Length: 562
RNA sequence: GCGCUCGUAGCUCAGUGGAUAGAGCACUGGUCUCCGGAACCAGGUGCGGGGGUUCGAUUCCCUUCGGGCGCACCA
Image (cartoon, rainbow, N blue to C red; front, top):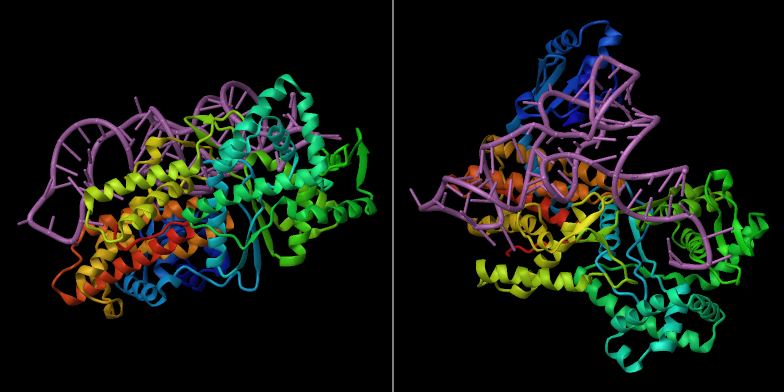
């Protein structure tokens, strides 16, 4: 719409389309038109009051699609609703699920590093954030034509395994661990931290065991493998439930044999210096604390692995951009990594983006594995699914594939509840909110979509029969607002991808659902007049395409009946 | 102490240079012979405080107060 106005304007005033486009706005309400051109900035160059300018331009415009009306300092444009509505609905129906997608990313690869849970730790609620934000970023880029590579950078290496091994030797019980791996491993891990407060020498013992692990000590490697195996079984269950998959599982241990190369390179580039017995890269020129590369006992640290990972991925995937979906508390760490790569001479370091997100709190408090104050994601999902099931039992007891739908709704509710928040904000998890399926929720969007599908079923018309859309029937305020929203969808996807911000899509879907429901209540859709019915149904189906596409981007399912 | 981040309605949050700042929850009332009530409609003294830039600031800059996070051998 703005593009159209910019084109018309460029023909009447001495500005190019490119200059006009960013100035155009959407008026605060419908009476003021569909697109507005503020004349303040022209006042200076023309040495005239903006009101005058608006009036003068208005007189010069003559177009069939739009009419221009000066309103004070603004020049407001009104579109021919009938024509615009019919064109849009026809376009959406012909493109189907392709509406909103584009090819701007063609032949470009984007790597997304996300989820990355820690082995031997529970898949807790906070991991949902990285997992679903990352998944959405992958989907957004796919929709824009990019080739995407999703990588799960598992936390399967590091001193924590030294701690786990020590804890296992001291308090581990094989049988208990086999029966309930994660829970037992966490239990002894927590105990380790309690004991270490009184006996700090335990920390040294843990570091020693990690060193042994890096040196391929048989016992250490055996235990580590076992921990990884048991953890992965648990994680897979969760990913299956969430419907999330990865192109690669390449955890930290994957880079064990790729770190020497990094260290050698740092040495040859004279970036590595010794400090307090450790090897570091000085970053004082960047106003940052130094990056620790090698600990004084010679074992590696995560910065080294992240450097090796970045180099490996650049070599193997030749990415255009890479996103790290990792909590905001690691911001400094990524700035350091990027700075080191930059010092190494890799100019592509500027294409690496840390996508930080806020903490997830439970009842306003931080969750901690060590303190045992975590909420398991699986528990939350199960409760939500049960809730969905009991609501279906009440409202639609004869639903055919009830179990499947309850899962789609229950899981969707939890995912949506997370993704609707701006990612940098802290999210305060509360049972009351998570188990509420009304208002600004995933189920509300899913319900709205099911409603559009229900209309289609009741109409006994097939999609192919929805031709000859007549815009005359789509001119009511509710219809027009709905059309304007649908029209925005392609821009929404671009904006969300550019900002790596899934909440933009989530918010949009809520707006779209609310607007559809207004339309649904204000106008009767399944009317006797066949032409009117087809036109309105076409609008409903267009809405449905966008809702389903958007939900899929966020990682939610869109059942046709719920 | 230094750095980053967040302060918007009772609560949870959108909006981020422009025309009267919006949703949801909760609360109250209403819609309901009609396409699914997980719905719709109606009800509001709110941009932490103070400066500045601008024709115009919730939005940008400075400062102050308050919450959160980070600041090398954890990830």
